[in-house]
Image (cartoon, rainbow over all chains, first blue to last red; front, top):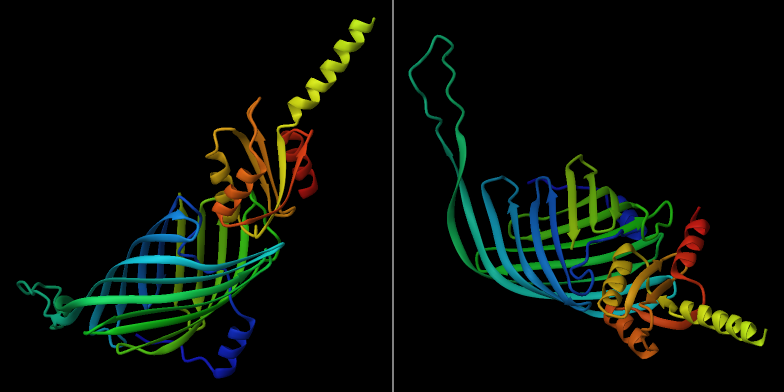
Length: 245
Length: 109
């Protein structure tokens, strides 16, 4: 997997301008939240959480990573507990500190190239050898634990957050730090569509891949649905959807 | 004549009382639609609640109760705290929730 190698200046600019409405592990009391996120060439993740109170939620998650040379896939399936450790309620703003931790199973699948099955030569064959097919086979698995946190500050016009997420097992580890800044061109209300422009800077580290990426995202949010999509500065798709019920 | 006057007064007082079940709360921390949903969900769990309106712009939560029912201030504060927010002021008004909803819609245009 190739990550964006942006200039230090661009990254700093993104970080200083920073953050936009980042999904929260707890939305509101007695609600269920389903989230799915896709980052082309990096990871795919899905989570489902139930929040019995406004400060606690628990649920399951699964994410997949590919290493830079595409020679293996890494999976983690986990159970997680999320805690809203602190909230500041201001007249026109809100700040939060979230912490989470959990455990699960990590697995690596190695890729090998399986020669394509060739049948009887036909009149259309011109001596070209069949293209090998990539096949992933389970190679290793182990217990994994995870921990992380998020701090955010939000008004109806700006949003800023920093999030760190860490997965560790004996077979691999992975960490992602995300800084976001969001700007709303207008102030939405309960029944109107919320629109956000988001700059997202993310740094990956671990023993599979390392790198930094900056993405520009457009986010829409109304009632129980949140959808965002955009691209990194090197043109890779990023998308996320969240449903609350 | 006196009887008619008494009936009118009783009628006016009763009318005012019928509208006295609308509660307006100023609430801190309301910045997004999810905040509003959380507050509304908690308040609707109270059997006395008839309707709820939330305005992010006005930092306002309005509750109307079923006829003859009331929700004490302490219960309202607890409900809002259980949703994760903070009540700054509670007032009871003779305006109906539909009137308030209409005013909010007009102001938003």
